[in-house]
Image (cartoon, rainbow over all chains, first blue to last red; front, side, top):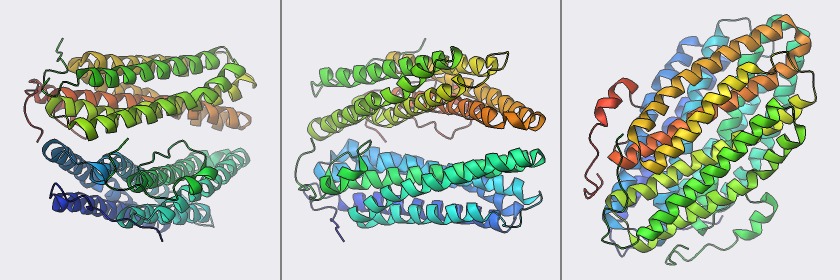
Length: 246
Length: 246
């Protein structure tokens, strides 16, 4: 496992502030995971009330996003961080947007689960959605874990896992089209299933984005829009944390 | 019209660098607008080749995003900007993600236009999509204009316009469900129309996000997740550019 440490650049003596930002991010991540878990439970158990509760609770995640962004700006304005410390702030400023959007998608899944709870259910109880959701759940958890431990290999694994999730989504989507053609009375329900699958696929994308920021944080290298096949070699060696960002 | 000027804080003497970041952002915005325009032309003229070309050209926007992000980080690392200058960098770092995602949605619309070009067209030639697209086009242009001129009132107008766009999208979505129920043979085509409408609606959201960053840039106030009705009063007075960010 390849890891790196924060705060090796202690010249500014603000490690506590960086640590606070990092732990606030992970705390927000915990809340997002909880919301996602409840949204899935609402879907699986046909629990309309729980689904609506998830949708209602999204406001807490939004508040955390605003507060963490503000804290990052305060540190930038008052401490002028450099090198790895600056990368932590920038990675957090970027990744927090994705984390908040995962919250938004969990909110959507909660609302859709509440709708699906009151209509007839297929015999499979949405097995295909639950499978996709399990993979996406692992992606969120892995992305937060990679951020917590600065684990580049785990981050890379999740970037790759997103390809699988995209394929699974496409399978569900094609199935949905077939179901709708076979039984047009089901169109409304199948559309809600499609939107749920779409929300799950988007959560996969956002988890992948967070992992790309983790890789940037450790390596100082922006790997977005890069060819996945070349990445493993590209990120082999972490940058010197003391190096001025280029 | 309420505007503010950059570089009032000239203590660091790096106005040229800030101006370059600002103009790179607007240049990227111009490219995004061009891509969006071509995607719509592909849809309206059933021009499959143009649609595919848009999808192919998205890579240029991605490259600009990475380059501008890098320039922002370089300025943060080497110049430790404060007050309004720091807000410009942070607003750019945030807004550029939305601008890139508008590019992604234009890419999707290009691909969908290419698919729709080769199937039978409705007599309306997708009038409802073209209407929605016109409003969204105004939103993108307005968001870039608000960023260029630091025009808070324009930014607020666009934040409000997004509510209309959401309603228009919902109308198209409900219509689509009806069309599919009436004629299941149309399901595949109607789904592509729905995804196009969805991409347009998402572009509206991203344009709105950019406007929220413009308001933050001028006022130092983070208005995301705020109640629209209170905003007008809240952002009446711009902050003193010399004030240290809180």
